[in-house]
Amino acid sequence: MLRQSGSMLTEYRLFPLFLAFALDARQVFVDRLANDAGPVRGEPIDPSEHILVHSNCNSFHIINYNTITLARGQITRQLPTRLADESCYKTVSQLEYHRQMISLETDRLQLRMWKPEDTEPYIQMFAEPEVARFLGTHGQPLNRFDAWRSLAVQIGHWHLNGFGMFAVIERSSGDFVGRIGALQPEGWPGFEIGWALRTKYWGRGYATEAVKACIRWAFTDLQKSHLISVIDPDNVQSIRVAERVGEKLEGQTSLPVVPQKALLQYGLHKSDWPG
Image 1: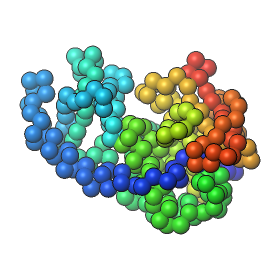
Image 2: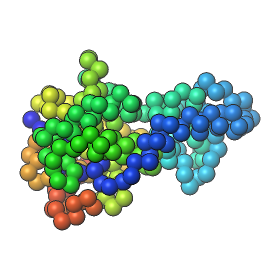
Image 3: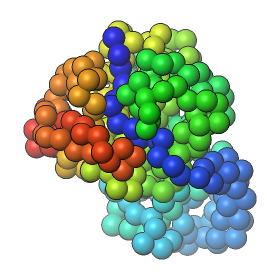
Image 4: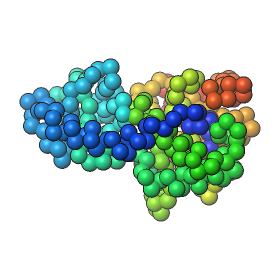
């Protein structure tokens, strides 16, 4: 059974400068902060640990007492109670930047940040006609460059918005399953949870399992009050996933990548979420 959102989220035409920043420039940025930022609230900096550094409130903010959202990504961090009222901190580490970010786990899956080793299976996933059918502007498989660019956009979305799509990993095997998570690019009709899985993992309930975890993350950690999933009317399998996780049809919408195409908008309000 097909397990993918009808949303054409990552194939909008965005030059992937984000990948270079995320994978190459992050350590320079982190090292400079660790060495030059000075003590935080009178405490000495320990470069081996996560560091809270006062920053510009327009770029960084705490979304709850346990998580910090960055304009360049998201990193889980248990905050001391005394910092609960602060609103202008960012977190850095000597460890690899993208590997310090948030990770979700279900019984069978891990949803984590992107790594270089995800590139090849990601490219292979979008070479599958069944996967590409309801994604992108033409519904056709992507060549290697376009698939790489799609992955670069995933990483860039995290760095711009502080949330994004996860790489989904099967815990028992370590295999790359697909991408599932949040997205809200420029011009999007709302905060979306979307999904796309490699065909070999269809029919196992993985999409439903991971989407439920993302809904919990969206409503609890990100403090969203409403979320949507944009689905092609012909994508019956994704409609079933949306219904299984509690989303209801809210009407029709369109996306900036295909403005002429009428798509279905499923959605869920936090007040209707069973928790």
